Image 1 (spheres, rainbow, N blue to C red):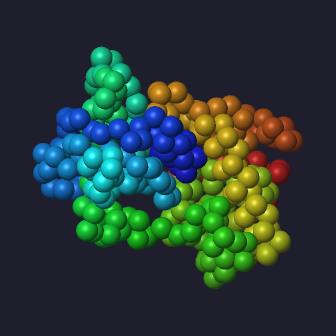
Image 2: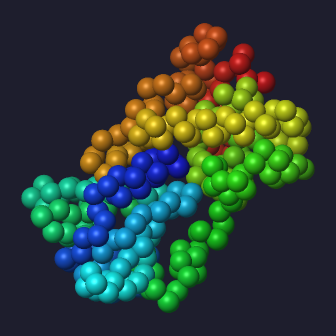
Length: 285
């Protein structure tokens, strides 16, 4: 599943290519991809002639502010929301490029360009939110998100307080989007390695010193991955169809049985609450 660095990579790419161009129409090839409005035709009608002012990211969600009307008097036209889920991709392509088997939604722009939403497993969703509605009232998952990892709210003190009293493995806690938004399996494993903490360590038993180190590791690994354009793992592609470079330098994720890049010990993979966790038995305790 795309995590914060992958979604941020898509956001930046879309802001470079798709802004201030009216939508000239489109096609919904799988109706259930549209989470709101109820009818796919209503979604297309709302998007047609609207133009994207800017793309934003909140956790693993993307939202775009929409405007409509003549350049001299643009009016708010609501928001476009996207959640890529497991295998979703937003691709900026030429109209004459063959349509992918798993293409679910197409939005047409000028100069024979289009934005395609491709999703093999069909878990992803798109929303159009009317301008008189609060985004969170329609995209209700936004209500459940904790602070952004690079925000002032996400301090080491906040993390220490949030983990206090939790009698569960730290790896499981990091996957809770209420704790911190945008982190998934890959970057939880990587941050725990950088901080020297085993994924099975109980939250309430972590010292403040170790939590401070974990806080810094979360920000460091996310920054590194964003700078690398996301990961090579799974189905992630940027808006031009290219996957990222982070996977080639991962410390532990998806490296079961391989030598730790730090000490040479074999990386171990275990299951925690149905999710995989990778760690170095020597470097992490």
